[in-house]
Image 1 (tube, rainbow, N blue to C red):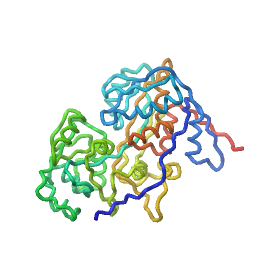
Image 2 (spheres, rainbow, N blue to C red):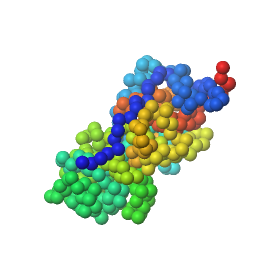
Image 3 (cartoon, rainbow, N blue to C red):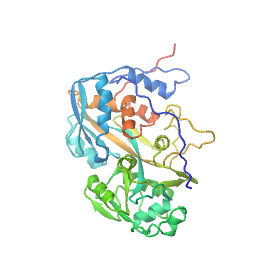
Image 4 (cartoon, rainbow, N blue to C red):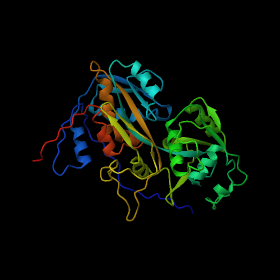
Amino acid sequence: MNQFLNRRWGIALIAVSGLAASLVLSGCTPPMPPDVLAAQVENQIDCQSGSQEVAVPADFMGSLDMVNVTLGGVCPEQLITEVPAGTTAGVEILDHAPSADQAATFAELCTGEVITVPIFSYGVALSYNIIGLDGLILSPEVVAGILTGSITTWDDSAIQDLNQDYDLTLLPEIAVMSVDGPTGSVEALTTWLSQEAPQAWTTGPSGTLEYGEKFADETELLNEVIAYEGTVAILPIVVAINNLIPMAAVDIQGEFINPDDTQLQKVGSGAMEVVADPTSLIATPATGGVPVEGNFDIAASKIVLAEGQPLIGWPIMGTAHAMVCNDPANPLPLSTVQFLVRLSGQGSFETYGLTPLPEPIRVQTFVPLQVTLKETNSQ
């Protein structure tokens, strides 16, 4: 039987009320833990009136409905309205860090300063439509072979050797499918392949696949994967789960990791790295499963490891970003994104099936989002 590193861990981030457009954080010597400092953000709020349109990728449409539930409980006159990606809006969520062209296009339509921050993480997996074939195990080398077209049948020895309990004969040939354009999911998975199987995956990180059939958008891709057995696609885990599409487990440091463990996704999100300046915090995909030192706080994440359990998470995590037009004459867009990085906003994303930002990364978003940090001596 396949063995997965799939233990039950801890509890999720707690949603707490309050938003800060400005914040006074208390410091002490030694410094207070980051979750204690950050929790004080929740004690103040500057509510606005009106509905803010937020452009959202197709894969994550519906996620802000969860946020509206908690936002309405705090600010009854403030609302978020989802609009499709590509729609002009004061806030835009991307499934990856914005490219130079995307940032420039957004800036052209903004009457103020553009602020960019990571907004949530999301697990990514190689999904496949084979009826009854749940729990398949694939190595990075096998994933690379499938996506480059060097492995075209499910009973290929490279797949069969990892899945000896399965009969993989007489299955349809593997058909690779992807969107005809860059996506954060493909970028995350190809970044992982570049790290884990560089000899098998030689093209480096990329938002697009060269091999396979292309589709105009995520909806067309998903419809094709659901309709035809034997198809494979790189999908956000939440999309695969919502559409009952099996996902492959992967091998990391000799352990087979199950993609649908939300606790392992939290650990894996800590592998992101960030670059900061006064108006932005840009994060990489989180790949490899091992948190970067200083970018993950296990106590703040409310995760409890089993005795002897290594700190290894799901190794393929995309990082979504928000671009916001900060116009002093219109505080609603900035207020909206400040709420999204608040604990209750992050908790709402988690309810939808996305992964909250690691607490040390969330705290770093306070600077570009103009949350004032002041240190005072403890009493």
